[in-house]
Image (tube, rainbow, N blue to C red; front, side):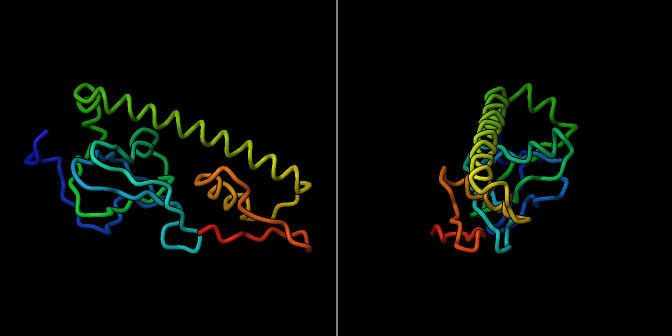
Length: 166
């Protein structure tokens, strides 16, 4: 892959490439630079879920499933990306076997992580007697993504209060 490839694009730092909740039908492979992945980007619920570097791919869910993105991807620094469209997917697969295996491994890891988060959340809900306020489950799952521990405490009123984890 050469930098003069017509599918390679330059992206300045701090640029949103994929928006959480929007359908994006392209996948990207990082040629040079870094990309941050967030949930709740630029909201009070923002969580940095990962930083990707060269050779990593992102956006595969939109390309493969045609579903809204589950994260926002933002360029951490100036970077070069290889853009893969649905029409180019067959060629990308045949020419990038290692990338496809890595995408599959990342998806499998994500499924295992989600299963563990569901188990931990279920245990916590059971401990609380099943009383969980609206929106709390989503916040709890976000916290579990970063650490395997209970991200809140139950106050005297019985309501959950999130602990500052910084």
